Length: 204
Ligand SMILES: N[C@@H](CCC(=O)N[C@@H](CS)C(=O)NCC(=O)O)C(=O)O
Image 1 (tube, rainbow, N blue to C red):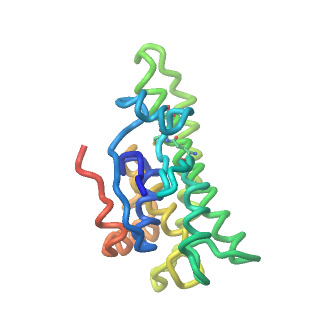
Image 2 (cartoon, rainbow, N blue to C red):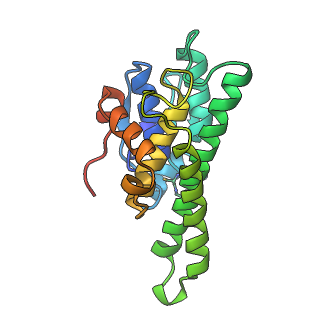
C-alpha cells in the first residue's frame, strides 16, 4: 500500500495513524497538493491529499473513505470506528466535528496563504478560527483526566481525529495548553503511543 501525502496534513496524519494502529505495512510518498500539483492530481483528480493506493492498484481518496476501508478490512471485531448503533454514532460525531474543525482552520490558513495581505478579510479568518475553537472546546468538555480515551474506554477515531485537530489548532495559534487542558493532556498521552509518535512530521 502507498500513502500519498505529508503527515503535516491532519487528514493524511489521520490515515497514517490508523494504518499504524492496525499494524498495516505501507510506503509513504511525501507529496502535498500545492508543491506537487501534477503528482497529487495523478493520484487524485481533485488534487488533495491523502490518497491511498491499494496493493490491487485501486486508489482511495479522502481520509474518511480511506479510514472506512481500513476499518472494514483490518478492524476485525474492534474497528476504530464501531460498526453499529450508539457507539458508532458517538464516534462519528466527534470525528465529523474534528475533521470539520480542521477544514475551518485550513480555510483560514489558505485565505492568509493565498491572498495578498491587503486583501485579507479578517472577519472571515476570525469566524473560521472561532468555529474551529468552538469545536475543540466541545471535545475539551468530553475529555476526562481519569480516562485515557474520549470514548468507549479504548482508542477510536474520536481520539485520532481529536489528536490531529488539536495539533493543527495549536499550530494556527489556539492556546490549547491553557484553554483546553483536558484535550491537551489527551493528545500528550496519545503521543506516547507508537502509532502517534512514529507519524510525527519533521519540524517545519
Ligand atoms: N476531506 C478531505 C480533505 C483533504 C484536504 O483538504 N487536504 C489538503 C491538505 S491538508 C489538501 O490537499 N489541500 C489542497 C487543496 O485543497 O488544493 C479529507 O478528509 O481527506
